[in-house]
Length: 398
Image (cartoon, rainbow, N blue to C red; front, side, top):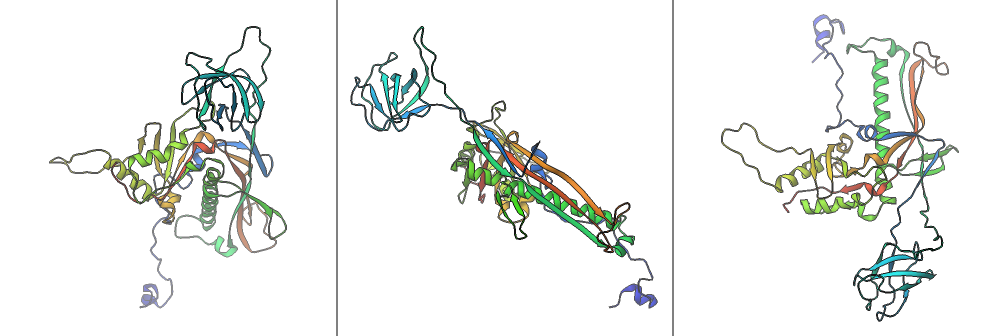
């Protein structure tokens, strides 16, 4: 069948076509915009493509016996390591409760101690027993003790250059659309969306690299949250769930992220960025973990949890639209400690256009367009405060 415009008059497009008043764009659904992680993170400045920062971890000394202590008389202990152990440190024997006082550190694996330095009598100690430091004690008029150092650890990430362009022929740019907006403005807005989405995906899933690219120029990429947790946090901070997950298992999976904090931000609250399947499973866990009643006369029913608590922390559930772009990501969730994250900009977003009003043409090409460029990296000063959960499949009671 011919177009109605042509059929009525034998002249193409004689009548005005009917269009809606705005352009409709489809995008993944969720409780947050695609750029949730970007908006949650703080900001700082990068000064070079190789961006590093220093971290320190508080020292809590301990000693693990590698040979049994036969009786309550022996004073030389053989241990796995004497790192961070100093003379006059007090250690508690975990198995017996006895307190011993270190009088000298004789090697990297041996100490001499004063036995029964408290009220519990000295006794035999089995191999592999751990002794934990419980302070230090010095005699009156003692000499200055040696210092205990917290050696800084250098954490390295690279900046990544993000570039997205838009371009349309000059003729098309001059045309007026029926959508109430110019094609130039529409193309510019689409480019900005792609640029922001590419940055957000890298901040979550990016992997650090530095190499010479195919064009002979140096190319760097950044570590996102998922990779920094995998590479720098304990293995327990990355969890693949089973076929079903109950509340007890969920709590156990999240616990590792609450074992460390950054000094000055002693918080137990996390944002849980989750895909749609994960959100549904989390709500089912909540429903199966309690009871609710439907009474006569109700006109609606159901539960929608936006947060939950464990014995150690609180989690605010945010369905991240980006994680709904494919089936694999929809089943995952990331417990994010926002105080640990900062976006470090080497170059903030710049917009270079050509062919538009007041800008030059691009090498004489009859076109209008532009390019957005941003160079940044991610600082995750406490990877151990985050947890990545894969494989939300189904909920169970328990």
